[in-house]
Amino acid sequence: MMNATSATEEIGADRIFVCVVLSFFCLFGTIGNAIAFFIYYRKREKGTSTIFILSLAVTDLLTCLVVMPFTVVSEILSFYHYYDIVCKLYLFVQTFNIPLSSLIMVAIGFDRYFCICHPFLHAVTVPRAKWCVGILTVIAALIGIVPMLSHGVYHPVVRQVNVTLSSPPAQVRASTTPFSDGLFVQPLPVYNVDPGESINYKTGSLDALAPTPVTPMDEVKLDVDVGQWVVPMNVTEVDYFGICIYTYFLLSEQFVDMYLKVYASLFLVEFIVLALLYALIYRSILARRAWKNKRKRTSCYTSTNCPETVAEETQLTHLNGTATETVLLKAHTEKMSTAMMDRALYANIKTAAMLFVVTVVFVISFLPSWLMGLKLLPFSYIAFYMFYINNVVNPIIYAFMNRTFRDDLVQLLRSCVRRY
Image (cartoon, rainbow, N blue to C red; front, side, top):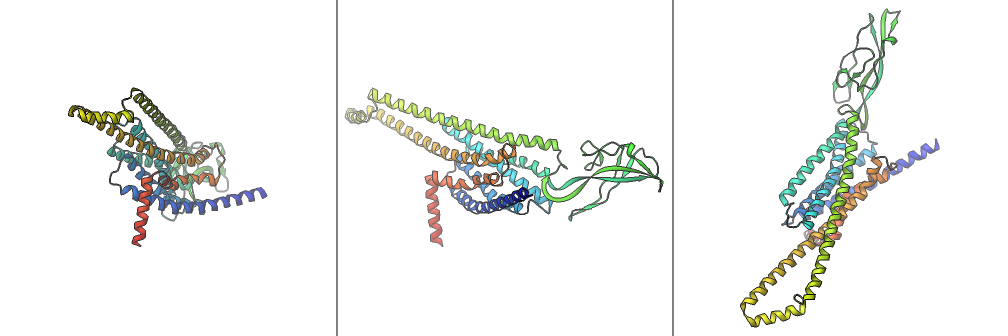
């Protein structure tokens, strides 16, 4: 008894701590993601990385504005929801946002891979990036529909009822009473069933989905006092529990189990794909760096592009004529274009590094709750809800790893101070 009481108190303390932390996450995450969205949205030239960062900021902002407060209220109320639609809406927004964030991470990984490893392919353009975000949003919405339909505050309850008949029955006809949830009143169906078979409340017909079969004929008894036959029968009815948990009225338990396996596997596949993409990006960067170092050493050995010989060659060509000067001008132009390409590649690498850190934080923050969902780790309130950290720290990562973002942020703060 003492152990049960202490465990209950510990869960209550953890729940309070989680609610307080999520409230701070909600406040700071809303401010940070709103600033990040505003800064990136104001950019005149929006590249593919900007499109994906904007979509990620919107997703994080929606999480901080809607999902986190919803979670805090649900935890305070111990997931007691008066209306069924509130329960379903909460499950939808939660299971819609998390897959959307992870899918955008994968899209960012592919975008950085093509920008760095295949810069001349132009596989990911701005219009394609916008289409990609739209398609991923639809996919995430479809993923969120299944938990919405498989949760509710109404749950099936099996009750035994005695049906009296004036003669030994070949069939049993049972009717039930209306029920009300405060929103509507609806009569329950009338069943025509054979003894020993199952009934399904949802369809009003014989169905193997019913948890308990009807009582067999050998249990049918004759009530001598009234001269009627009494048939005990198990009937599945709907009761209002108010707790938002799994219910299998709209979707079968087998379908929900299969969905949960696919849902868990989806994140594993995404983690593997992201690891492969960033490994290929890192290998490409190392290969390009080795190629540049080799080229620099070769140029110096042939004494054609070392700084001393370049200056001497420029002086001689000015004395000799315009033909050689034109050749040197073309070489200078090619050198300038190469330098511009190197700067563009360096910028892409910096962006990839920043988004790689965003991805790593997402994986680390989501991994404990994912493993708890697979029952590979014991459940912990604090560790489970720490995946919300990912939705809060992204603007901080942008500020630390993107100098342009910092400059824009300082400029924005100065303009706000001057205005007020």
